[in-house]
Length: 591
View 1: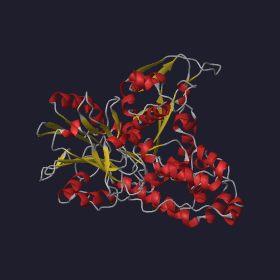
View 2 (view 1 turned 180 degrees about the horizontal axis):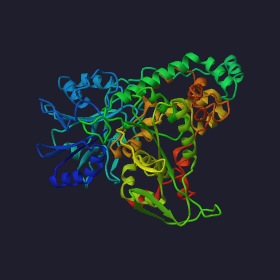
View 3 (view 1 turned 90 degrees about the vertical axis):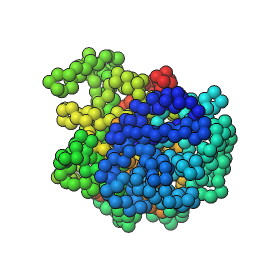
């Protein structure tokens, strides 16, 4: 994971101010190597700034990376498949060398074959042209500040302090901008080479400064969504299936879609293995000369079926002597002795190198995700007893939440600002930090990579709104909703999640959003992904639940969907009358 930033303006003072403002946010994403390069083109001043989290190659590659032609690359991404890259060199160096000899069409073709998350900024010196963009799912953050009359500055950056002029770069394709005159700031317009699967019916507010090219960049997801609707014969068969995950019923359900379940497990194993392989064989705390059997990979872990399956598959992908961290976050619920909520102040002290917390009344961290996480952890221990599973209990008080939101988290959530963005963003930030307790002893995860379950619900009908649509309009309505969910993944929240989780110097990776996983799931008929004639906790994400149950994850397999803001109980700490779509005054006031 890296922090990348490009700034273009007329004034050195303006550039220095923006560089200084974003320095801390960028460096937290990439603590292993930080560098900067300044260029002048006529009256324009350009700054390229990069911070690197070492994940590929024998050693970190400083950024911006300059080739022999003077071209500059800022790369925040992972080439997980599509190209064979020697383990000795970083993907940054590989991309820079590959692009140096390519014309523009060849460069676009090169990006279309990358499997893995990415965002980038690339400057071609001879043409004085700047390219930038995000992968088709928008898995890595990229923000921009467009020039305005009172502020003639153009910026593209992974992160930025909250301000109205900064917005997310739409994950529509690859953009380019000519930098050969100062018109770039006074008459700002960028060109867009869109993804081939995008239907750009209208860009709304973006139409005034985005010019769409006729050519496209081909999507690495090769299969379109299967839109077959169940006929009467299929519907009768589906209604004859058992509606439980007992042992005999699980075998019955498995036999009805054995080939599809086996293929799903295979493609998920490849997805997780790719994300494990692109990681140094040392944790964040160990040096090159040290042997390391600490956790290099962690899982954001609620005990639900999405994270439980990732953890179980991960066990097959890492050495048996290496521990795996399961990061489980809970927000304190304050109770008086008779069980009623009561506002009390927590006082923390350090004693004998152990963190002790004293309260006027007890704090309860046994929130739903803690309970199910602990139960699923114990089941993992039984299924795979040779693995050291570190169940990390991350406990957050309301005081710590308010402090970190005010000083830091609000800028990472930006430019989003809803109540939902706040609660999810804060829960992810503390979970991704990995600072908690194992069996009562303080522990901070040293993992460089964090595996997360995002993307499963959108593709497999995991949300309550999917059941509502199915009840109202049957299979056709459900398919329409799933298609909409997948199409808006790039515009929803992955940029936010990336800014939040990467802030701890870890690389968040999403196995369910691997291009090959998405392509495979697109081939399945909708009733294998979600049979919503079945009860809650079984019908949604059906194929994943049956696979999990058959592999022994019987607790996780039967748990209904529970969003992190409710499972971690952060939502109970705030104003219960708020709606998720409301603007969050806590974020705005803190900024």
